[in-house]
Image (cartoon, rainbow, N blue to C red; front, side, top):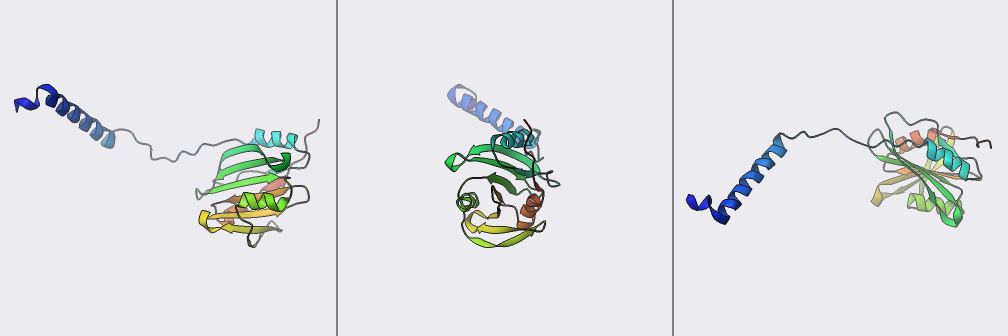
Length: 179
């Protein structure tokens, strides 16, 4: 027994015992959070900045759908110098949904790129308005597209059609800011 308590082997055994004790403590006694933590990102400033940056009337949600968490927002540069607004959400079912808008031309190419598909699979009525449905199976991505004369609206993500429709139903035009 003496050879395991002296020299190099003693050191190895002592380190192993200490690491085993730490491991047992971490597994059974260390506090662990099982709570979901999705960061909430306020998009009001981003929407206001986008509204000032573009020459057309923008659209934005009047409120967040119940139980949804806004978790990302950005203004990006699109093709041909167009600006693109992205507002991302974790839905109540904890799927992903994004509202995107731009005046990028041509609107069909913008919609194709945002939907990752050019295949229209149907239509969906949202608040009395018809939206185009697109679906990309390998990504489980559903997309609603509405092309208006001066802007294209896209609601896309892994959320189901009903959840995407919920977000689309809350979209309303925003007045341009006064100088």
